[in-house]
Structure formats: structure tokens, C-alpha cells
Length: 338
Image 1 (cartoon, one colour):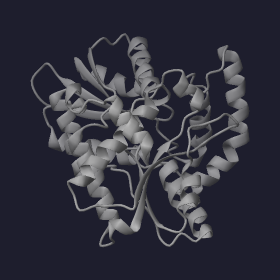
Image 2 (cartoon, helix red, strand yellow):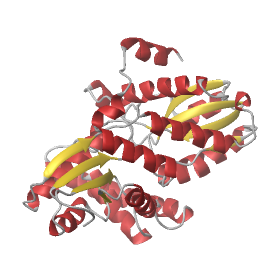
Image 3 (cartoon, helix red, strand yellow):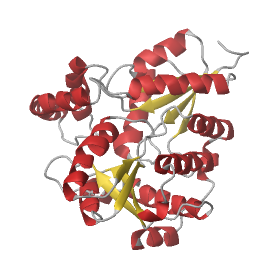
């Protein structure tokens, strides 16, 4: 324990990823058994379908993780970020829990319960809110607390994409990736994980928050020397035959194939297979085949000190600090027009 009672622990919640190739099956099974990912009822039918999808995707998924080092980096990067957070803010205890692979929420909370923490802050590591990610992780955490009969005081951070320090860190990362290159020679693609259109039509705010996030970053660029040819929002990682949000990242790369391209993975805070394989390997090959003059991918913020400082600031000043700018219909219309 770090300081006098009452104690607060901050738990970074994320989806997780396989810690080795043998864990890929566990990851896929848990993900496709998640009702927020695969909205099939009754649960027995979802379990059968999840098993079928896992068997069909297992070999391909293992090959993907083999290409990026035999595992997802999400747990090790989260551990490094937590170490920085604990050094920056010794008044609290920072830790993390994953949705689909170890360390699971139940295991993390068992440890916190044994250590006597009376206050917990559940911190979603998804910058924008979605039922498929944020809500799923929050509900998983609450179920774990219930099974343990652990009743601490709970507060939540469910989105943080409007936070100024966080967005400064993104701008810095884009600038660092460009190095000495001129931004005006590049098309900037903000690539986010896609969703089935049906999910958005049912009220999920994710698309609107991604559009709003892009509009905020455009304003942030005005205060810097970064001026891009174009700034575009695109959606990656489509799975299955359903209609998904458009345009796809692949389509946008093809549309701007005569231009230099830089991609920032806007919906991800920690690197994973979607960023390391899909953006840096799969789409890079697509870009090279199309003759794109130059193709750059920014890393996620991962364990950057600037990201850690942003998280501490959000924790210190409450959820309201992450909503310093209110989204208006004008912002939404402006985003759609670009």
C-alpha cells in the first residue's frame, strides 16, 4: 500500500491479446463469446457460433501473431505504462486488466481486494466510447467485482479523446513520425477500428466521437506548423459479410495512392495486431503494390511519458476534465464535410 487510507487504485481496462501462440484460441473464443461483439441469442447458440468462428480463424490468426513476434504486445506495454504511472503518481496504485486474455479483471480485483483498496477508478483505455469495447470492459469489471463480493467505491473514466494533454501527445507522435519530412507533402489518415453500421444505427456513439476527435485534432494542428494535404477518417478491420462503416482504410489508401501517406491509429491507445500487422504489414504491402510514394504509420502512445501524464491529469481532475470541449451539431457537420 502506498499511502494512508482511504486507498484508490486505478485499473486500466483493455481488450487484451494473446501472450503466446497457444493463447490465440482463448483470445478468439472469449472475444466471440462476448455478446457486445457477437450479438447472437440465446447464449448457447452464440457459444456454438463462437466455437465455429474460432476454429476457422485460428490458424490465420496464429500466423498473424507469428509475424509480430509470436504474441500481442498489449500486456507488456500496459505493464510498462503502469510502471510509469505509479512513478508519476505515488498517491494512487495503477494496474491493468484485460477483457479476453490474462490478466483478467477477476484476478486483478482479487489482488486489490486482498490489499485492502477501498476506492477503484475504472479507466477505459479506448479513447472513444463504444458498446463493443468500453461498455463490454466496464460490465466485465463489474461482474468480476460481484463474483468476489468486493464492494469498493467505484468511479469511471469511459472516454478521454477530448483531453488536451492526450491530443498534444498525438500531435507530437505524428510530428515525430514525420521527422524532418514536410507535412504538406502527406495525406494524414486517421484509421480507427470499424463497426457494423447496424451497431451505430442502434445508438452507439463511436462514429460520432471519432468524427469529433478528428475535428479537435484539426484545430490542434492549427496551433502547430503541421499542414497536411488532406486529413481523412477511415475504418479498418472489417470482419464478415455485414455492412460496416465506410470508407475503409484500404479504399482511402487506394484513393490517395499518388500521394505520400501517414497513418495514425486513432482508436487505439496501445499497439496490437491491428496496428502492428494490419497497418504496418498488410496495408503497407497494399500501398507498395499501388505505388504509394511513401507510407508511414505512427505508433500508438503506448508507454510514452506524455500519455502517462495525460492519464494522471484525467485521474486527478475527474471525468469532466476529459470533456473540456462540448461537441456541437456544427462540429459534426464540419466533420462530415471533410
